[in-house]
Amino acid sequence: MTPPTESGANGDAAAEAWLLMSDLVLDQDRRRRVVEATGISFGRSRAVRRVARQPLSMSELAAALGIDPPNATVLVDHLESDGLVRRRPDPSDRRAKLVEATAKGKAVARKAEAVLRTPPPALSALSDTELETLKRILTEATEK
Image 1 (cartoon, rainbow, N blue to C red):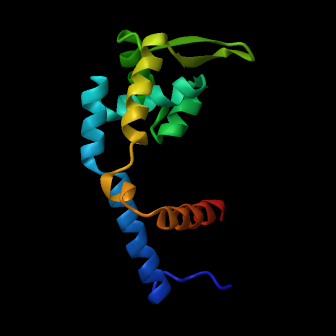
Image 2: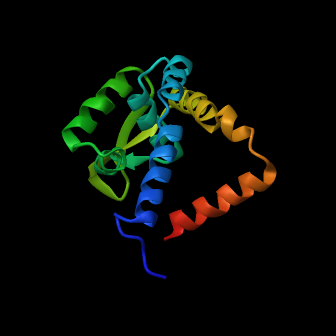
Image 3: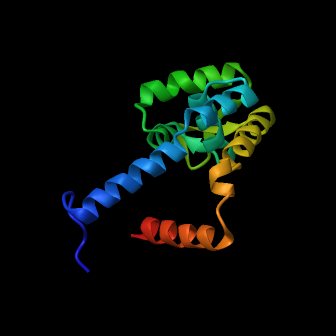
């Protein structure tokens, strides 16, 4: 099967589907609800959620968040002063520091995840068949 080009019916349909998915996922109301639930900015909660899953080096965290290492340092400084994360030596590389969530940070991450895992009402209103079809399509799209 030939991959769709950026122009033409397939490309146009793919672009439209992508924009609809982006609107659904990047809904600003969800971000606002995360801020209300956690008491910190969405960007900070995103960082805490990452290190709550597993400790990351500063460079890994910067890469995961798509930010420059100096910005990651400033971000971690703020999160550390709020008691949400801590730095500790990396046992495999004493020159590096790992960032891990504290108990307070893990609680914040759980609050954010609870908001983010709740599907929008329009998605919940789909039938089981429609949801299975959507899951199949998204699974195929993410495996390519």
